[in-house]
Length: 171
Image 1: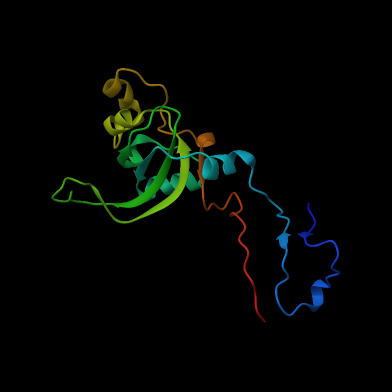
Image 2: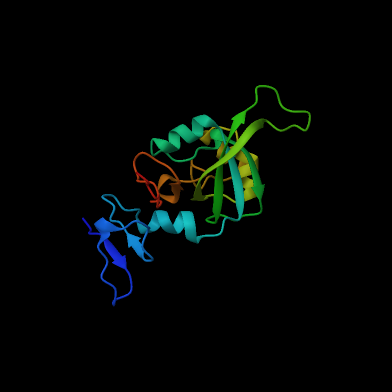
């Protein structure tokens, strides 16, 4: 557990209960469940080298702490190598491909980041397929997952607290 800390000028005596305006200082509030360093590193430190578009079913599986299987991948953008960071973006799966051949639509929503087990061109070949087909499609299979669970971090998730945000509440 933590305690509240305030960074303020050392010469001023501030009574926090009697303030009319927000004070000029930085307030660090403790969190009962802080974000672990690895989640922060995946979400905020690494620069993504591409994007993997996933369907709602894959997103639901990720929320339940599963890895990302190729069957849930709808599209891939960018030029990334194995073990590089990518954006995970949820889109709607179309029942009929668009005139351009795209099988997804709707409003793309970035939900997290991942370190991938396969390069962009390999993800493009295995997307939409079952994990058992990877060996036949690529000639090898490093993993059944496009990204394993320990290499995925989501922005919002029930099993991990959200990144804290500061809100001024006026009564």
